[in-house]
Image (cartoon, rainbow, N blue to C red; front, top):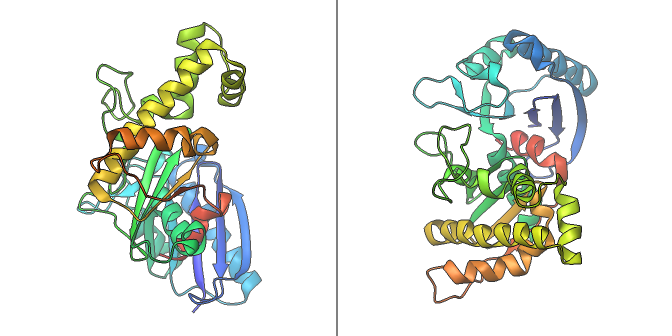
Length: 298
C-alpha cells in the first residue's frame, strides 16, 4: 500500500506519496499555497484540491492520509488546539477531512512527525538500537516529539514532547501560552535576538550574534552563554525524565555548532548521572522533508 502524507503549514500545504512501508521511495510530491488568511473552509478546500492533483498524477486514490499539523487534536473534544494557524483552533479537522476526502485520516503535531521521520528515515537509521528517540525543535519556537519503538507517543492530553513550555526562567518574558519564562522564551531564535538587543541596544540576527561571539563581542558572548547554560538545563531535564537513546535537534537554533560541543558539556553539569552523558545528540538529515515524510508514516 502506498503511503500518503500532507504537511499542513501556515504558508504551504505539501503532499508526498511513498511507494511502500518497506521501500519509502518518493513517487509523487506537490505543494500549493495554504492561503490561511482566507479561513478554515478555504484550507479544507485547498487540501482537497491538492489531493485531487496528486491522485491525477499517481493514477490511484489513497486508502488513508496522514497529516502533520501545526497544533494537536484534543483527544476528548476532537477539535484542534495550540495551532499558530489560528483559524484551525476549535475546529474538528479530522472529522471534516475524512468527510471531504472519503478516507481515514491520521493527524499528528508537526514536531511529532519530524521526530518520527528522522527516527525511521533520517538520523535515527544510524542508531538502530535507540528505543526512544526525542526530536527537538529549536527555531522560531521550541517544541519536540517523542517516538518509542517507531511510534509517536502523543500522550494523554495530546501534548507529549512539548518541553518548550516548561518554565526555565523565573520572572522571565511572557509567553503566548499564558505563562512566563518558558523554554521558548529563553532559547528560541527570537528570544536570543531579543536578549542581545536588551544587552546591546542594537538589533542583530542569530547568525550575526554567532559571528560576533567568535569575534569576542561581550554582548554576543553573554547571549551565547545564556543559550548554552539554559540549553544544558533544559536538555538535562529531558534526559533525566526520558533517558532517550537519541536526541535529534532541528530548527534554526539547532544549527548552532556550539550546542554539540560546549552545550553538551553543560548537560553534564545538570544530569542526574554523576556528570556522565552518553546520549547521542545529532543534527537531522531530512531537512524540510521531515514533516511530510512523518505524516506519510502515521
